[in-house]
Length: 139
Image (tube, rainbow, N blue to C red; front, side, top):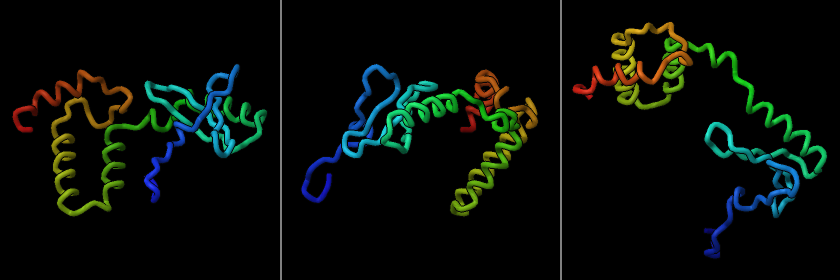
């Protein structure tokens, strides 16, 4: 609510579907076009940064194609690399938080029997369930 007690609508609520063109919407107030698509089970909205319809259609096509592309570098990430990235990202946290997380990471590294060189994309749910089942009593 703003200072007058009036509830503001979200961007998602202000998007109006463009007839005869799937996934294309326009903002009611500022006229900016948006792409709107469900991808991997989640709704995605993306500003196309234009009020021009033809340019919006081209940008929408590019955006939708980018959703389908897989980041090759991310696909090849190993568990060891992912854990290292996590440690680096969390440097700004409090000392006690970092120590707790480092303890969990060390436990994972010492007890993960599939090796830390496994690609994250190759880790199966059954592997995680097995690891968690072995540690369930300690959690």
